[in-house]
Length: 393
Image (tube, rainbow, N blue to C red; front, side):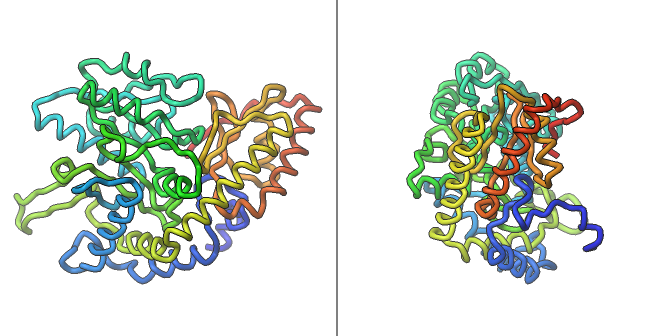
């Protein structure tokens, strides 16, 4: 296995700015030990494993505390952001059908995660993606024009994955209330980051349940919660809403089956890992990890701008994307990839995308030095990035 992994990106040394969130060897050890302790337990059976039910509920309560959950708010742990988004869309659809409404359209900004299209495909719904505004955030007037009588859900991100920008959630919520639409906030990236950034003084705009009109929120624990994969959370404003998420069936010989999420078997290790890491870090630990990431992002922004590159939008959290006007940014990405840096790309506009972790603070100077050399090489050669393709997965 170690031989197989010899060609993998060296994320432990900060060489990857996508897929992995490395908060330090101590946090990694807590996550691994907790996962191993409950690796055989199954959250499908709460009567057999009340420990997992308790840990899941406490994780949900901690999440709701961060996201201004009102009295009666509730949620569940899931396997990841895609499942959380799927459940939000499914709940929205079924709640509408219970009211006799057959609308089937999800209205998204172009920057929203593909998981909404995936959910729509599974659930027999449709998506329309609306171009973003000049600031790369959701264009609310354009989304209003796209949300006709067949609209079911509006989507905003906090932040979106491509640019790390928080959509104008208050404006989207006002539109949702005016049209009686469901607003889901995809905070898979920011749900366990933005609240701590706020505590540290970052002026993050309102995006969670404190905004009237926000009906559901997805937030990933295996991103900036630093838990083992796969762990996410789906939150609802109240139990009556969540009732449409629950699956129940009893017409078979083994008795009734009730599951809150899409999965049957649910790995106990993922729940235990999330609970343990949250207990280990606590509010002050998360605030410190968040401070390291935002400081690193600010240093990165200054560094690339000093080289004549430009940051896309005005990111406030842990994601930064940058482009260029006088060179092929995909060619620059290729040069950096050959130096061992695994990052992502954006296509609209073209840019290099990094999702930062605390580990990147230690390698930022080395990264910027390589960027400076690669920029000089691409400018001198007028190299084209032909053949480089942006891929999220």
